[in-house]
Length: 331
Ligand code: TRP
Image (cartoon, rainbow, N blue to C red; front, side):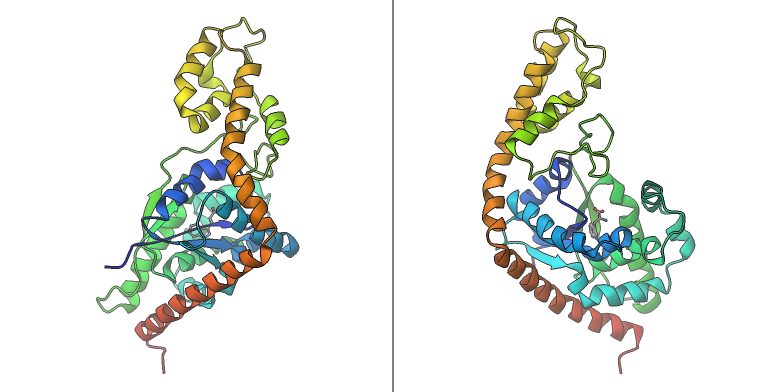
């Protein structure tokens, strides 16, 4: 029996941060040993919001690939897929778009939130339709499982619906396309350093995997804590403190003890932050080493992406043969 296949990925709009690590990258590292893993570098989806800035996207393709490698994804185990290189993704997107209604796309809650965030008055056709292209990302290789965060659930539902509809329209009782399962991230989303519910580049509250030791220390020192705690002798409220949430996500062994001491005013914010910064730097150190290697061997990274995409194209072309045969448009 073949190993089950996973496909997941990131938009290539900039380097990845600790929120990505906690929410998805650390899980990918665990999954790569159990599943055949495809990591999509979603450059077309990046263009839906950054079409005026293709240079940024090219740079980000390397950055995102290196971020994934630096956390411990093994290039001998995983397959990188550059979205714009995969012809079957483009073809499937077109076929699916014939039967997906504009109304469903308009009501997709994640797309709506993102449209607001980017301040769109006029939604482009590509932006509105990107969940359709995401369905193509997942189905070209008949992925069994898709590990994602909560914000991607509407897209997963959309994908599953498209697969069911396709099979119903053209399958004649056969399952031409595979309906993928969702693997929801086991860890909750990491808050931003400013206490904002989301860590994000555009929010200016992110700790990057590529940050230096000094940057980590400075950013953690500036993080928002319990506003009612002014003096060290004031008792703290870890349940409303940003820093305590970081301890929980990244320094779980000490979490209870730190909260307990904070509540008794037995540890101050400065010391607590120092502990956290130390902990984050210990986590990032081996990643920095791997990153430095790949930054000096960009040709190798490029080769992983090109070879991986070639492999993906072979799989996608086979899927297209089946899809076109089912649709009866193959001469
Ligand atoms: N939309 C995803 C995100 O913003 C990225 C993505 C594109 C993706 N295609 C995918 C994730 C396919 C999983 C499967 O994070």
